[in-house]
Amino acid sequence: MFAAFEQVFTLETALYFAKGALVSLGMAILSLFIGLILGVLGASAKRSKYLVLRAIGNFYVEVIRGTPMLLQILIIFSVIPSIYTAITGEVLRINVYLIGIIAMSINSGAYSTELIRSGINGVDKGQWEACETLGLSSWQTMRFVVLPQAFKLIVPPIISEFVTLIKDSSLTSTIGAIELLKSAQIVGAEYYEVMSPYFLAAIFYLVMTISISYIGKKVEKRLAVSD
Amino acid sequence: MIKVEHIRKNFGQLHALKDVSLEVNQGEIVSLIGPSGSGKSTLLRCIHGLEKVDQGKIYMNGELMDPKDEKKYRQQRNKMGFVFQHFNLFPNMTVLENCNLAQIQVLGRSKEEAEKTSLMYLERVGLADKKDAYPNNLSGGQKQRVAIARALCMNPEMMLFDEPTSALDPEMIKEVLEVMKDLGNQGMTMIVVTHEMGFARKVGSRVVFLDHGEIVEDSPSEEFFSNPQSDRAKDFLSKVFYE
Image (cartoon, each protein chain N blue to C red):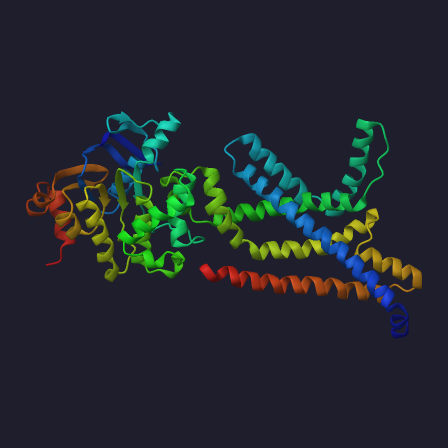
């Protein structure tokens, strides 16, 4: 095993892994960001006074959380080209990274919806009343008072959602995205030896996830200043 | 200035207010007192519209306050400032930002104008030097004074206080009452739900005594304390004052 490891671990493969890791990280960052926007929309829908919006919000969260992410990726991978073909009549040459980001964003959005909703519920009712007596609209109350406080409450779970996304980005290897796991498989295939590339990939994942958790704790401490 | 006519408010089975009528004139300082659960806070919250009444009408300056007439209703509500027992300052903003927010967002003032007004009122409550502090670094008394300044920044015609000193440490009660007294001396119309009998007696012009969701007594402050008419008021006063 160690002989094989030396053989596999060259500067060239290290760079190749690093590139894969960057792809994973990039997809996770974008999905987290878009997911948070979807989460704000989803949480607003679930809190809406209109039954239709609440139903849409609930449907979104339940469907996404109740099905495997791998299946979601595969469905979007096959559905989007079909729709494109149906509309334009042309065949779509698909960008798998884009598909991956779309699928991960939609997935993350459902979890963010619940996080943000719980964050909003965690803000003291008195804050809403104070805004009401000052004449602020409910949107202004959300924007300036409630969401900033809600986000502070949900920094820890958002960090863990980010870590989850980094790990789950490995699922996009199934549709051909060359992220960290796929890079390891490619290297493994090249050297007819999979164990050491897999271990190496694990180390790359751990470096990313542990650093994010660490930075998350720092951010949490800094945010606690005004408490 | 404010006229409440036959309002009723129920919370499920609980009849918080049963047929309450009240009129408050310009410049009056009305103390709402009574045992806990008597409906005094509910009455105050109904006047502002934080609670919707089940029955009855509320008039401001002779005009009906009707939630269905949204724009007018909002303007009417904006003429009232409200101070809460638990301050409800925004912890994510500095003292100055707390005061600025609604001026900029609701009244459409520029940042400079808003800051000028905020500083003027913070000066008046003696906290201009704390403008850059966050609420959680202030004492309870300071928080409540900021909350009063924040409400005053909106140029209300009257101020409603919901047990403004009940959440304070004893040594901080006076600084808040002093601010309220100054406000009264300047002619502000005020309705104050309070357990501070000294304040009700010396600063207040009128006492409205509630019990079980009804107004039992409504008389000038001095008269209420020296010569209460109803048995319930006598009973209440005998329990409040330790002799």
